[in-house]
Length: 220
Image 1 (tube, one colour):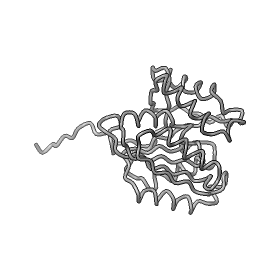
Image 2 (tube, one colour):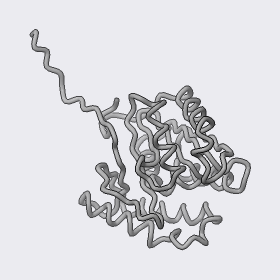
Image 3 (tube, helix red, strand yellow):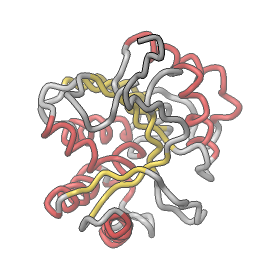
């Protein structure tokens, strides 16, 4: 377990149920991490969209969100909205990812996300990555499931604007959605920034965190 924010990060894993989940939930964090840790290895797994225009969008987008990183992206073909009935395939994919990397940090959906695909993937991650820090990103949507996050990554105004621009540039298939716009993304980032005394921020849920504040040996 790492002490997040201390020392250099060498490996990151990022998982999403759908193309654009990772970028929407943690795109600003990816930009910030890649700037601070050039050459970082990022193993990304997306469960649906493989072989479609969505995969093409995802590859271009994550390439832009992860500049100067060693990005290794896998996009599978599980049907959108049907992950619970494809549990075995999803679990095998997460376990295969675990066999490929031992990350310092994992970005994944929240376990209390209202979308069944997001929630199912979130619950699979700790079954394969048992000793890792997992940050659960949030995705604004009509379900009204935003909660009270406990971890924040402040974003500079430039990074927040860059995130919005990249989302608009690289996911044209999503532009027709009523919630997919600049106001929604920047508005949530502004609220999360207020909560952590920053202009903008991305926020995360953390279900388990091990502290290393020093060891006292009573035998000495």
